[in-house]
Image (cartoon, rainbow, N blue to C red; front, side):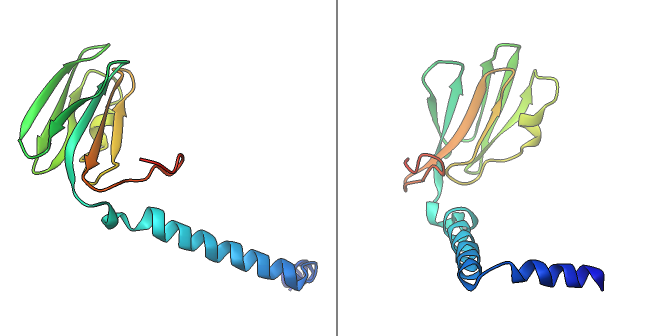
Length: 137
């Protein structure tokens, strides 16, 4: 009972304009999430894989050709598999294997990296993808 009274007293501190602003902010947050994060189907299909090693320019591979890519990283070899329009790390010389556990990259914009080996992979598609931070491709 005491908790309910405390809650009611707390709500009385808000003015009607405060409540309208809070509800509007919540609805705006939900709408932005649903448009930019929840629905990834607007991005189209991925058609290529970009592999970046250290400070070198990225190398592009087609997702239409099934292959295993062997890259010598900073601490040892890394294997990347392309199969059925998807890509993933299948082996790395790093200790924790976070890159391998990440699994398949399937839609444009999916990215993962093996930080100890300084290798990152990212899927790209024909339609535009938007970076959530920069707001650009």
